[in-house]
Image 1 (cartoon, helix red, strand yellow):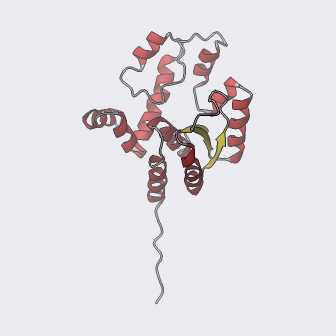
Image 2 (spheres, one colour; image 1 turned 180 degrees about the vertical axis):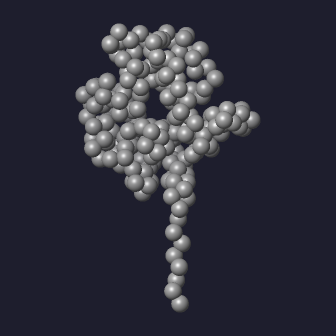
Image 3 (cartoon, one colour; image 1 turned 120 degrees about the vertical axis):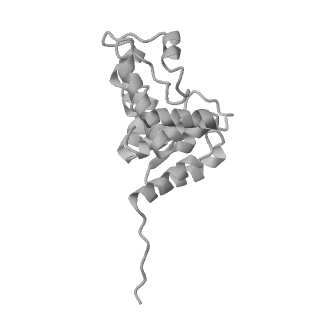
Length: 199
């Protein structure tokens, strides 16, 4: 008798891939950013791993779900620091470019690779006549959002469009990795936030 092999649906495969990311021992932000890379919403992400000894398994897990991942240099940390950063991308070329732009401090390309809006990059760099929101204005703009993913600069001229991009990222996380949203809020508030996002 012929044996039937169960073939997983794309949805089941994606769910498994996301559960691998959710189980990585780091904060919510790096895991959320890697979910966005997996889903094609961001070209690259950096994943901060607080305990270096976890890095080999993290690298193996990320590669097992079809992502490219490598340890990347961080010049800020001292040699006694036990943490490490891992670059994550959907292709080796993008990963190589991340490592290169980071070591060369090429801020514009780094922002583009991170998926930040071009106007937000202009605001951060103070270029193309784009002004940056003050810290107070920034805080007010994102006060009802979780503090993760809100770390790019907002421009005075395009703050609403930049905020829309951020909300789109949160909506994608809420649809595909709702447990990450749950970890940002007390359960009741997380459910309310997801409900608003998914309207």
